[in-house]
Length: 387
Image 1: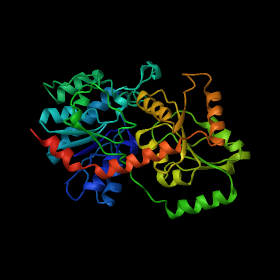
Image 2: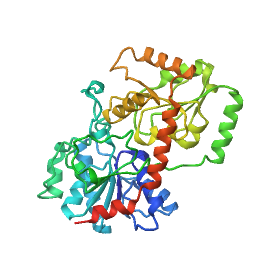
Image 3: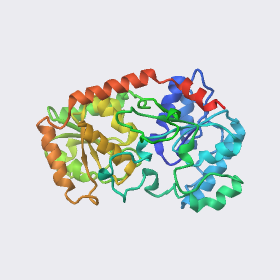
Image 4: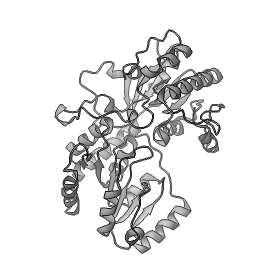
């Protein structure tokens, strides 16, 4: 049974889907996903747990306590229907409760941003984990103690921290050791398996190619910049888009921003895009350093900048990428009032072709290719099922 993070949109379903696509012949796998996604997945040959999960008649609860109560109830119902041998999840912080109660081994997709293993001089103590940001502070599990104890009595799992979540029998790190660094003193190092990026490479639709063709016809010979903050993060990027539009760049973005009439033809918006294709045709990518997103410009050898979101799991990796010399990091305005001047300096480096160490970029790409080729899901499952 595969369980994405329930408010995580596509970003926490795609890694599970990537694993399923690679190993669907050897695994009888079921996804627990939003009712609206079940038809889409079934159309791609993916099994889904046949229950109503946040369906049309189910509004998202207004607070984390109600949300977690609902999710745990539905996970329990899904378990009873499927009776899985194994639970594989991505940032589903309620899954340990189900796994422990039923004595089912759990494989967890985990990013090393959990550990804050970068040098302390780079850390901002006021930053939150990205799951703590936004309307659903899902990590505040202490708020749901009553709901949890009702549904899963005698649970020994700790509340309100990552310790229980990190204790999965096996952990898959969707990256490479040079970027996703484990702490030197980590316990059970052998339980962590590097898979390389777990991404799904989509081809652009015919309609998208037609629209892009018209856009590029209107913006001939302009450098192309792609700006995205993914499907979840709401960090404002209007100022960046306006900057590029005014400087005669062709801007592609997944962020729906107000654009002055004068520059509208310079900006192409679509909510979802085939990231590998868009990064490949771009000269510069600006993104929020989500785990899936940061791999694309490395794999396509495209220059990129990361923007601060005040989420340490993203920003610690962004600092690591900057230290490696393959990107530049722009702090969040609330972290550094000089953020715009930092952006301008980084843009000057990009326009002088000194932003990116392409020797290192190529080395990281090769490590990605090698890690993906050497990853064996069978070994992870064998480890997880071992007594």
